[in-house]
Length: 285
Image (cartoon, rainbow, N blue to C red; front, side):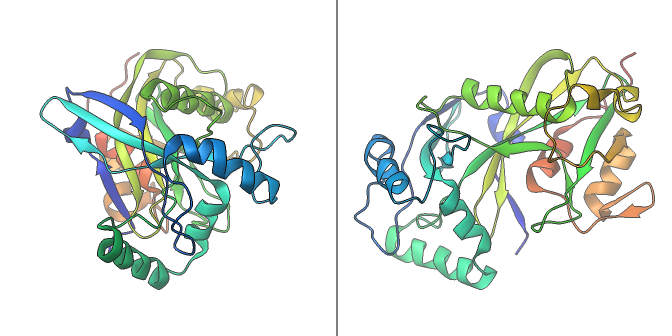
């Protein structure tokens, strides 16, 4: 089984109205009577989890473990509706730390008992955004973490639920905030384009993905200028630079870039790169 999957492809959202709406939470295998309805998770389940010390909600703590959860997108001729439930960091961690065999068994159980492959999963959804510089270069980084160490990665983060209802605008704003945190004070050229949703085919964690042109060229990054206004200390300062369709295709197909080989490409980074056309990657100077 491939490591990644696309829950929404660029073709499935092109020219359509995309809406994020309230959706269900996961069914708890050990206690299926726990709330799954959006408002009940927020108002009843989350306070109990906080009281038990299983999560933080950003009040009285610098950490907010409340996240959105991806439901099953509904695609029609003119519209795409994506249900977004609620989950929390600990539930996402449980899916990530579970073995592949156990996760596959849980998927099968979801199909047989709930008619939903992902019914027992947190399906925590983050946001990701792929910037393209004025000279047609995509800056990426290399993960330095226990999970997916050494994989090619782009700008991405977990979502945060702070009481607002899910919307495309809310998710886009969180993606842009992370763009500025990781890449410094870049200037957008045009509006971000929503291109789809990518996820792990094994664990279910996902990202909603945008691409956007920026006015800075690649020298802004190569010179280290971006580090002066970057506020995310956790992202490795080493960047990769994908220039042109040829380098992009070599990375996607062979996991190689400029003679360097990588163990993998993060699913949302892959989707963002795949969406880009030759025109996107042209020098706009």
